[in-house]
Image 1 (cartoon, one colour):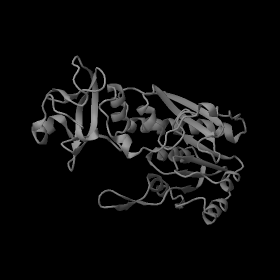
Image 2 (cartoon, one colour; image 1 turned 90 degrees about the vertical axis):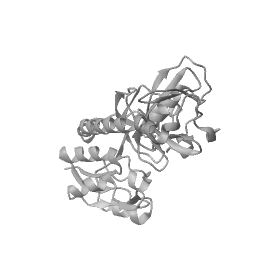
Image 3 (spheres, one colour; image 1 turned 135 degrees about the vertical axis):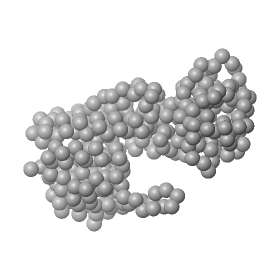
Image 4 (cartoon, one colour; image 1 turned 90 degrees about the horizontal axis):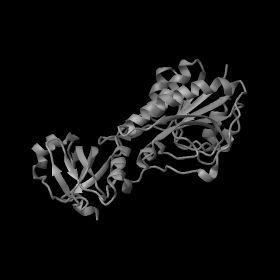
Amino acid sequence: MTKVIFMGTPDFSVLVLRRLITEGFDVIAVVTQPDRPVGRKRILTPPPVKVEAEQHNIPVFQPEKIRLPEETEKILALEPDLIVTAAYGQILPAAILEVPKLGCINVHASLLPELRGGAPIHYAILEGKKKTGITIMYMVEKLDAGDIISQKEIPITEEDDVGTLFAKLSETGADLLAATLPELIAGKIIAQPQNHDEATYAYNIKREQEKINWNDSGEVIFNQIRGLRPWPIAYTTLNGQVLKIWKAEKVALSSTMEPGRIAEVLEDGFIISTGNQIGIKVLELQPAGKKKMSVEQYLRGAGAEISAGLRIGQTDE
């Protein structure tokens, strides 16, 4: 039986690991990131993949840096036939990549060579793409640059956000892996090199990318809001305080009001003008120090001051 080591960390990886197990592969170990403090109380929390592995009594390794010789040796001592990674979070050294006879493969959440890097799902929405998908590829030391084994495309709708797309791509990745591995193990795969000239990158989201610039077009801002939901969440400011925008929709505007001004206040939302004739109707938000709420709730309480013409994001300029 093929001995497999699985490497992954977040929720995205869990379905992939689960599928390996249910398909009957001999998962001899799981490698994931160390437990991290989570939340305001900084409670030490295991990665989702660790929780899944322990439910199946699979040994778990959690190296801080897998490149360290002593950590690499632990992996090599297991003599895996195949290593499968999915959102693991560290680049594997050559010492590991060269050992499994069937190679090291990665389940990546984009249609490579587009969106190499750690945040491909965020960027697919931020960039307004109409489709994305899963690529299974051989791993090399360069970021997401290995030969392509298989791909599967899925559409992106305007109702999608990062959360829904993560769920769809995790399931797609698990399905594609299950369909690909028998061919790979049988030696029937002919991998295709990537066109590196067409590579684009999806580096981890930075804080400055979360701030809304109301001079941008309504389409760009709409994609920013859903492309950062449910984490890390796009924000603006009101009276110098952070105001997170959880949910919004695009609406047509007939006025030419200055970007960042409230064009209209409705019972279920308020509309903010942008750099073009597409306004942003805010539906759910989170004032500083408070929980997420509907705009209807907000307008009955802390947002009672909201009125047409009010400037949002004064300190963003």
